[in-house]
Image (cartoon, rainbow, N blue to C red; front, top):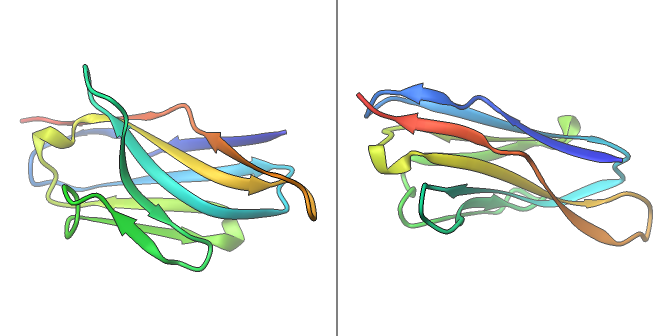
Amino acid sequence: QVEVAESGGGLVQPGGSLRLSCTASGTIYSIYAMGWYRQAPGKQRELVATITSGGITNYADSVKGRFTISRDNAKNTMYLQMNSLKPEDTAVYYCNSDIVKSYSGPTFRYWGQGSQVTVSS
């Protein structure tokens, strides 16, 4: 069994910062790419940022220069440091992990339950 869980969301004022964490646990042989997505009310889920096992990152244009994705492979944990937050960043943030459970086994994508981030004064 594998579980992926986010933490660190909350309410912050415009211009403030938050750090989200995403930890994978359970039967894990290896984790390949990990990523953050978000879904605002009435909108489709959109990509925020991704990171490969080797640390190569990719960001949505809307968050470049403000958000930083990172990961600690030893802890099976990924982070999203969000600075200079704007009201339009308000959304439920989801993380995913591409996980292999055994040597030469298939890769499956696991999603967390989501963490609410609200940017408001």
